[in-house]
Amino acid sequence: QVQLVESGGGLVQAGGSLRLSCAASGVIFGFNAMGWHRQAPGKQRELVAGITRSGSTNYADSVKGRFTISRDNAKNTVYLQMNSLKLEDTAVYYCNAVRADFVDYWGQGTQVTVSS
Image (cartoon, rainbow, N blue to C red):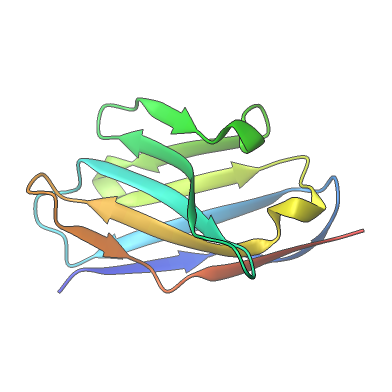
């Protein structure tokens, strides 16, 4: 059974940094794509950043230049380095992973709160 476990969320002041990690267990062949989504109160879940097995990345416009996604295929782990955090980055961040047959998995979410 595949499980995604996120860590690294917390409370940080505006302008600060956090690094999120998501480790997948129960994986046999790995994932084609992994990524991070977030959901703020009263808003829809949105894609923050994604990365393919080969390392191609994409970012939401709102985080370009501030966030960096990376992955370790050997460890089936994806990371999100978040710098210059803003109040509007406050949300629950979810890890997502997609297999080659398009079956996808979600983590339980980790809270990121940015304070002024």
